[in-house]
Amino acid sequence: MDARRRRQLADILEHGERFDREVGDRLNRYRNITEDTGEFLSVLIQAVSARRILEVGTSNGYSTLWLADAAARTDGRVTTIEVDARRAAEAAGNFARVGLAGRITLCRGDARELLPKLAKDSFDLVFLDAERTEYLDFWASIEARIKRDGGLLVIDNAISHRDELEELMKRLRDSARYATSLVPVGKGEFLALSRP
Ligand SMILES: C[S@@+](CC[C@H](N)C(=O)[O-])C[C@H]1O[C@@H](n2cnc3c(N)ncnc32)[C@H](O)[C@@H]1O
Image 1 (tube, rainbow, N blue to C red):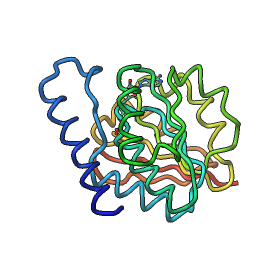
Image 2 (image 1 turned 90 degrees about the vertical axis):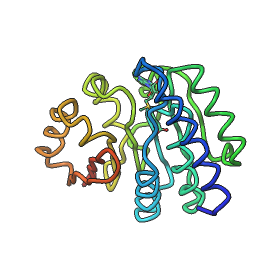
Image 3 (image 1 turned 120 degrees about the horizontal axis):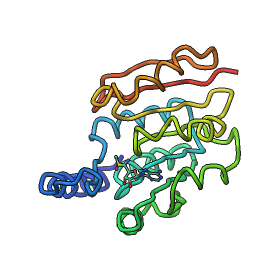
Image 4 (image 1 turned 180 degrees about the horizontal axis):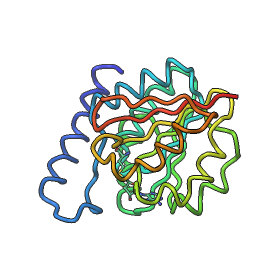
């Protein structure tokens, strides 16, 4: 990421962190990934040459911008889903300001309704960062969209909220389909690589 864009993203993150410190209701906060998680996602995308990238949980678009900046190096695109209209509008503004709107398709709505409309077996990398307790409800929809041969799933908060994600992580660890790893970057990133 070039220095100018890194500063723009740092401003978005700082604004989000300031806002989150003052807001009581967790669901109204931005809850952005950490900067080192952004760097980690960027390296993953470039390492596996991911071109079709899906994010569930856009917020104000901070993580999406990391994904899209990396996608620019793989000639890829990011589809991102956000249910909250105010945060989605703010994300759209951030995408335009940073100059990455052309790489991003922002879907406004509930992932539980929108995911079934996306093509199956179609994403090289899926980043899951929405309401953790809902993941199991729409897990079948998510899993069907991860490319069977070499698709990579990344789940945020795997250490900070391990208890909420344990059932899903166990299911993935126990599945012959995936090779998994829990990585202590940021709030903890759980990786599941889909094998044919
Ligand atoms: C932790 S924040 C995402 C932070 C963002 N990935 C970042 O790092 O910049 C979670 C977001 O997921 C959204 N969300 C929660 N449940 C959702 C659902 N079922 N469909 C779409 N978005 C959802 C919330 O509105 C919230 O903005």
